[in-house]
Amino acid sequence: MTTPSNPAPLRLGIAGLGTVGAGVIKIIERTNELLAARAGRPLEIVAVSARSRDKDRGVDLSPYGWEDDPVALAKRDDIDIFVELMGGSDGPAKAATEAALARGIHVVTANKAMLAHHGQALAETAEKTGASLRFEAAVAGGIPVVKALTEGLAGNRITRVMGVMNGTCNYILTRMESAGLPYDQVFDEANKLGYLEADPTLDVGGIDAGHKLSLLAAIGFGTQVAFDQMQLEGIERISIDDINQAADMGYRIKLLGVAQRTENGIEQRMMPCLVPATSPLGQLENATNMVVIEGDSVGQIVLRGAGAGEGPTASAVLGDIIDIARGIRLPAFGQPIARLEKAVAAQSAAPAPYYLRTALEDKPGALAKVATVLGEAGVSINRMRQYGHDSDAAPVLIVTHPCSRSAIDAALAALPATGVVAVDPVALRIEEV
Ligand code: NAP
Ligand code: HSE
Image (tube, rainbow, N blue to C red; front, top):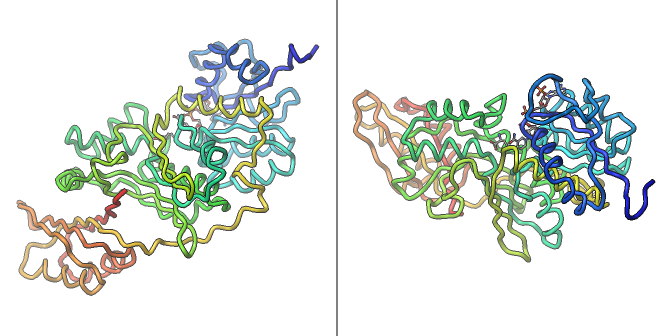
C-alpha cells in the first residue's frame, strides 16, 4: 500500500538503450537509494525498448519488461514517464513522444533534432494534456543550461546566448591545432573514437549545434523554436592553414553559436569564428562545451562541462526525471505556449572584422582586383599577406577592418567576376568575445 512513508514508485519506460539509455539504467541501478531520497519516491524501470533485444549493453535487462515497438511502450498504462533516447527528428522517436504526450504521460528526451523541428507542436500537445516535456540532455550534455535559463535566470530579460555546443567539432578543431593535422585526418580519428553522429554532417555541418542553440533561443527570448531561421555554416572548409593563421594572430577557430536580440528581431547563427585564444571560449579544449548567457540583471554567466558521453548525458536525463518526481511542472519552453512569439529573423548590424582566406592566380594585378572589389563593397583591408607557394595559385590572407556581414557577402559575390580567384574564399567572423 502507498503511504507517505512508502510512496508509490515513479514508473519509467525507456526507449533507446544506446550510449545514453544504458547510461541512465546504470545510474538508476547504481544509486537508486540516493535518487529515491532526492525524488521523494523510488524510481522503477518498468519496461524498455530498442531495436535489438539480444545486444549486450553492459546492463542486465532481465528485470524489465520489453517492447519491440517504442510506440507500444509509450502507450503502456503502467508508466508515468516515457524516456525517449532513440534519436532522429522524425520516425519512432516522434511517433512515440507524441503518443505519450497525447495520453498525458510525461516525456524526458535528449533528442535535440526532434525538438528543433517539432518542439513547438510537441509542447502544444504537452500543454493540452498536462504532461511535462523535459529536455535538459538535449543541449550541451551534462551542463544544466536548460534549467539555468528556464529557472535560475527566469528573473532576467535575456539579451544573448552563445557558446560552443558541439563537442565533436571542438575536438576536431583543437586536435588539428595541437597535432598540426589536416581536417580529413582528424575527422577520421574522431570517427574511430565514436564521436561522430550516425550522419556526420549533423556535427561538422553545424546542424546539431544549431538545433541546440535554437532551443536555448526559444527559452531565452520567449519565442517559438525557429531552427529554420538559423544561419548555419559548418567546419568542413576549415584548413590547417586557417588554424595556423588564426593562431599566429592570437586567435582560435571555434564553431560558435550566437543568439541575440537585435532591434529588428532575433539573430541566430552557428558558424566557425575566430575568438581570442586567451578568452574562456578560446581556451576550450577537446569535446568540452561552453555556454555563455547574458541577462539584463545577472550580467554574464558562463557554464562549462562535458557536452556529450554516457555519464554526463544520463546525468541530465536523471535531473529531469527527478524534477518530475518532485512534482515540478514547467512549460517546455519556460512560458505557456500562447505567450511564445513567432521569432522574426534578423541580422545584427554590429560590424565585426573578418578573416578571408583564398588563393589567387599568380599574375600581375590580381591582388589589386581583389582589393578593388572589397573597397567597392565597403570592406576596408586591415592586413593582407601573400604566402610563398609552389603552384600557380598564390595563397592570400586578408583581415578586414570591422564591417557588416552584408558587405562581406557582397564582396564574396563579386569576387568570381575578377577572374583571378583560384580557390573559393573562406570568410570567418572575428568575434571579440
Ligand atoms: P545510440 O547509442 O545510437 O542509441 C540509440 C538507441 O536507440 C539504440 O539502443 C537503438 O537500438 C535505439 N533505437 C533506434 N531506433 C530505434 C527504433 N526504431 N526502435 C527502437 N529502438 C530504436 O544513441 P545515443 O548516443 O544514446 O543518443 C540517444 C539520444 O540522445 C539522441 O537523440 C542523441 O542525439 C541524444 N544525445 C546523445 C548524446 C551522446 O553523448 N551520445 C549527448 C546528448 C544527446 P539498438 O541498440 O538495438 O540499435
Ligand atoms: N554529436 C554531439 C556532439 C553529441 O558532438 O556534441 C552531443 O549532443
